Image (cartoon, rainbow, N blue to C red; front, side):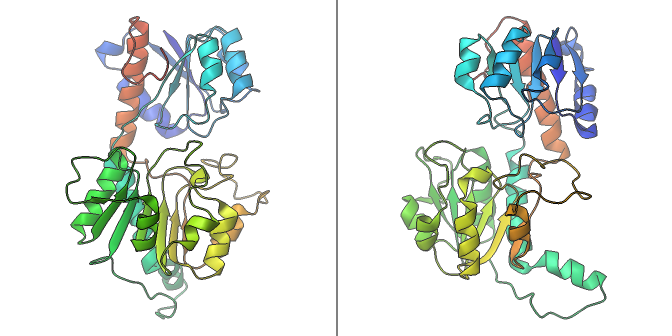
Length: 331
């Protein structure tokens, strides 16, 4: 089985190269290229059995059509998200799709907390001030999480990990999910409006679907407490950016931590330091002193990358054996 990896970085090559040395993966050949998978690059997959892609790539209708014409039989996503894949077109083309649904959920949850703490305690500002020999505490006032209420939107593996962390900090935990996690016996499941109006910290851990698209908007923001803290490590489309910006300007938020945001796909994981930003999203968000923005790195730990590599290759191995893997989205 031959797999072409699109959009690979040095760390992708390192962990996948290490993992494929295991005897069980003999017979699987992998090659790495730098370009992302898009309609313009999909033809590079000709001669391969499968492609491996990431959450920031364009795997829409045209891309899938070209992959099908090239003889591709499987799309391996080295991530949990797949909202960028045209599943219907893949099904029509007989292309199977597999994801990595769970890879060190604690890594992402810990990062969500790090974002919340950094934005709330203004660590990003403090770091810059001290580097400039400025030891004033003006503008650095924070609040403590202990005794406050955390609202976890989505209690899958990552959301559950975040809930446990918040509970360990001495917070009351409210949760919202269509399918309550019975292991979270300390959390109180409530409807979304109740969570929004009673939480001091709101952390988003749900997939991006038609129902969850722009779940954070002008209306939902109006239901939140004044001085609320909002964190998003899931998908940028969960938040309507214009409404968030207005809420920040209206002093609705004490702090905001974003590892994902709308319009990120064109620049995520790329060095754009010498370029002029073509979109105002990031510039607007970075203009606020109580906002912390990072580049979709919540997953970026040694543990997560090892898990991603192994699960992706297990998905490929199941396909090579003619089996339907546990992580496949289509029959």
